[in-house]
Length: 96
Image (cartoon, rainbow, N blue to C red; front, side, top):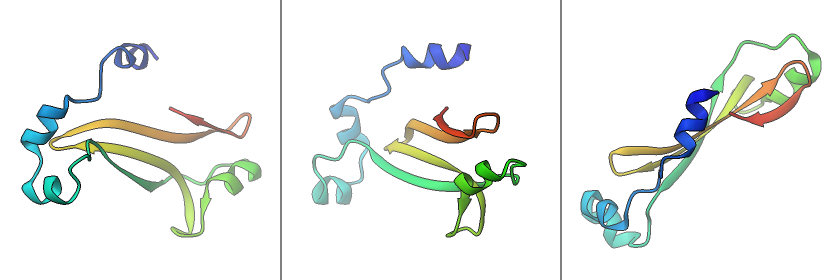
């Protein structure tokens, strides 16, 4: 928890000039206003014991239980990482 509070104080968004300098020329030409590229994925997790949590985490695409991950990338840097996990005691979704 301590590190989470510390990281929130850091400005994660790089300056426009830095992104433009490090971006590939094709990316700059086709998407000149792009600063961050977001992508989501699912990571397999151990099958939860609680049935309600199993239902919430089950991915028909992966055919198993997963945690959802959202990542934002700029040239050379991961600037955002958000992991959705399930609180097994209360079976609700939370961002970590």
